[in-house]
Image 1 (cartoon, rainbow, N blue to C red):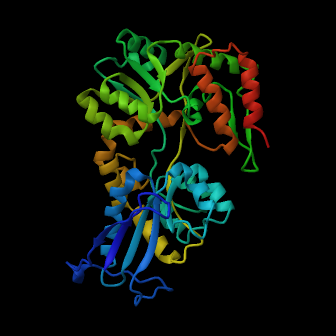
Image 2: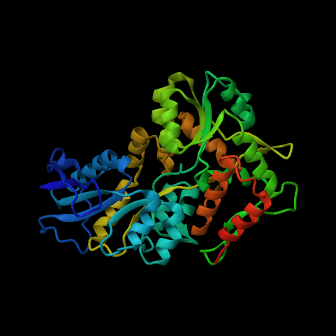
Image 3: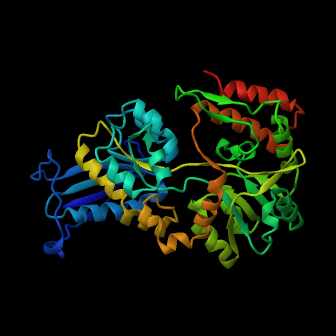
Length: 420
């Protein structure tokens, strides 16, 4: 008997929901049997594998893992355990207990270097095959230097503009300032999450002000407080204050943005492909998606930038079932599974053939992401980037109530972001 187990949380006192998956033998005679791993013992009653992924992927992962089990029916049996683990927090959870961590896990690509440096990931043994079947940007995101450490899973970890066509024209969506004016006139909102430094990069990215990772792979450089060049740091800060002052704008988390879309209070916002299905359900034929707009800064129109990235599938270097874990990770990230992920979750494939399908190319969200890619940068910043930028942006969202010097705030931000 093969099984798929869902653990609602990662605590020891969790309830278990066991979904038994029977051994499928239909068409067994016409299915090519792959060689078993060299260290495999097919006489084992069950091979246990634990998978970590976002809770929202539970149903999808169950279906993918069931097809994996069916593929090896008659050769070996599995017990695959699903544990919900946010992709953004995967690194910290895994490094806290490598030997007790998942065999297979999905994670955001900005965690790759730290996982590889800690020995949590080993170089993959078939890199050329993976490079040939995935988009170059996703392969770069899954690599440290020229060494491939993980399987690309998506090429869509970025953000763009969603808007309700009932309120905005094609000209309107070119300007964030104009969109907030329209939202205010309609007593509704355009939202963006300024509590997340990931989104706040949008205002600084195309101004000549820079942030990035130093050669040590850990610390950052940052010039967001610069007083030189055509746009200074304080100019960006003031532009953010001007946007925040509009009654048509609100800083909202991604969850709050979607709730506003669904109740009608939000008519535009910055988000990603993971919300595409729910937004289309709410707005129907009025669903619009486009690259990020320009915003007014120092009497100039600046194209908003974005961080880009990919989701990856990793295999724990300490897995006692490493060969089977590698096979499962490859299965989760193959063309068929990525196509299913797009169909069920609206996430853009990294697999070249899956990404080239008519359905993907016709997706408004994917088209918007591709349009924004011209103005995006692969996310490569150290851990000290996030909190100072979030604190600064939240103060801008509140209108800088203390009246503190913008330059002093930016100087403090840069000092904390670049701290060693």
